[in-house]
Structure formats: structure tokens, C-alpha cells
Length: 262
Ligand SMILES: NC(=O)c1ccc[n+]([C@@H]2O[C@H](COP(=O)([O-])OP(=O)(O)OC[C@H]3O[C@@H](n4cnc5c(N)ncnc54)[C@H](OP(=O)(O)O)[C@@H]3O)[C@@H](O)[C@H]2O)c1
Image 1 (spheres, rainbow, N blue to C red):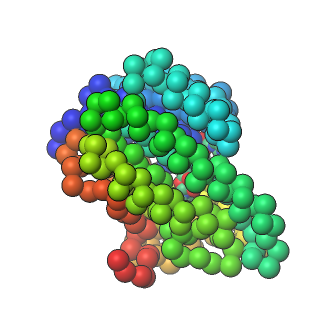
Image 2: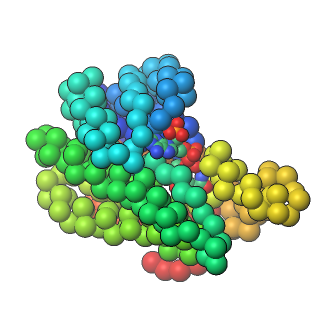
């Protein structure tokens, strides 16, 4: 399938590693010019080199996306480098979770600040640019925790469920302008974040974190975690030209683990 993405201009937040890096590379292989944003310059620079090798054109902005002015800076730099923005992949996220009986509510605020608020701000800033061209794609990376709360994932879940609501509202506001907004909800995915999230449990149980992750992967029908490349393939389709009749939707990529419908 020709995704019709050659020459498009994208921003991927949290694009320096994990799912964001794979999204940036999947778009680059389609000839997209990709700006990635995260805090650490060294990892950003190495992914820019990978984007260039993959057939795209890379640019990076080193910023902390919890700050509103930094969201503006990412868009301004992308417009300066590429002349506009056609695709936004909102992916940044790094919630600190804790058991509900000991959870500091500040952790919920932090999760909302980094993830939900930056997603909404980034969308608000790029939408006027997309409207000028009558075309745009916004993909928000949320996560299964939004609709599957446990006693230990409330900050992540609070940010994710709010993103599902934001996606629906944004979609209603802009789908008539040719701008399609969707959410992808990954299940457990093989990234360094998954390791950080499970490290405390591994230490508590006196086990290796890889064994904990393998056991968690074995509990879903797929029998394993997702690979970040698998998430990125679906994100690239949702960002594409042939994706013309999917919007305001949430795509669950959890290896069949989700029990509720729809
Ligand atoms: N992995 C999973 O199992 C899983 C499951 C469901 C949903 N998700 C969601 O998928 C998304 C990506 O997860 P991942 O596992 O790929 O995470 P990851 O490997 O930890 O990557 C996170 C990215 O965000 C950047 N980042 C973190 N804090 C930032 C900040 N304050 N400002 C700017 N950039 C920041 C990181 O770079 P710097 O640290 O250099 O800033 C990095 O590029 C997240 O939204 C996560 O909630 C992941």
C-alpha cells in the first residue's frame, strides 16, 4: 500500500527512544521529514542520524515538554526547518506509578502535566497550520491503563483516560477540516520504560526484570509483549493518506488482552 506520505512533515514527541523512535523511523521510511522532541540531546542526535539513513529528513529539538512555551518552540522549530506541520504523533510520557494506598496525588498531576496537557497543547498549536492545508493527522499514544485501572497504575491511567476524551473532542472539532485525530492504546511494549515500570516489582519479588516482563507478556493471548515497531506500523497507517475514514477512534494494541467491549 502506498501511504502517500512522501514529503509530509511530522513531529514525534518523545521520539528519541522506544515507541516514539520507532514511529519516527516508520515515517522516515515513507519519506517523511520528521522532527523529534525529547530532553536528551545525545539520544535525539543518534535518532536523527537513523531518520536520515532510513530515507527521511531528521530534525531534533531538546526540550522539556511539561513547559507550555517548549511546545511552541517545537512547532516553531519544525516550521523553520520544514515549512509546516502535517502530522503530529503525541507520544511523550513517563508517569511515576505507585500503589493506590501510598500514592502521592502529585504523581497524578505530573502524569497529566507531561502527557495529557502536552498532547492537547501540541494539537492546539499545530491545528491552525494543518487547517491552512486542509489536511492533517494527529495520533495520540495513550495506553491500556486508561480503561484497565489497577491498584498500581492510577497516574498512567488518569493521563490516558483523559487523552481518550481529548481525542474524541478534538476529532469532533477538526474532522470537517480534513484533520483526523485518533488514539493508539498499546499494551505492555518492549521498551526501557516497561523495564523501569516493572523494576520495583522485580526487586520486591527478588527476580530479574526480564523474567517479570516475560511472565506479564505470557498472560495476554498473544503470549508476549508488543514490540515498539508493531505499534509504529499502525501509527504510520493512521498518519497516512489512505487512512481516510478512521477518526475519533481508539485502537487497542494489547495482544488481545483487553476484556471489555467495544
Ligand atoms: N512501553 C509500554 O509498555 C507502554 C504501554 C502503554 C503505553 N505506553 C505509552 O507509550 C509512550 C511511549 O512509551 P515508551 O515505552 O516508548 O517510553 P520511553 O522509552 O521511556 O520513551 C519516552 C520518551 O519520552 C521522552 N521524555 C520523557 N520525559 C520527557 C519530558 N519531560 N519532556 C520531553 N520528553 C520527555 C524521553 O526522552 P528523554 O528522557 O530524553 O526526555 C523518550 O524519548 C508513553 O506515552 C507511554 O505512556 C507505553
